[in-house]
Length: 84
Image (cartoon, rainbow, N blue to C red):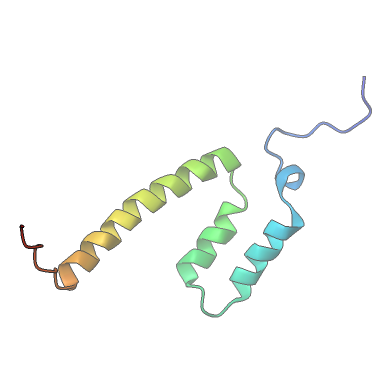
């Protein structure tokens, strides 16, 4: 039997790397990063990584489609291409 301590499957200390933590810290300190993104970064670091990945996918899908729809209503639409 091993003397190594057992960790939970998603123990953040066992999967987080310094490089990733440094990237998050940089974003949190950057004045150009929005408050809502900073809040999401803070909250996301404490989440189960599998659930977090699912949430990121959902968030990206829904907000990207909404933003595209809003942009499409504001920007003029190009005329249709002529038929040959």
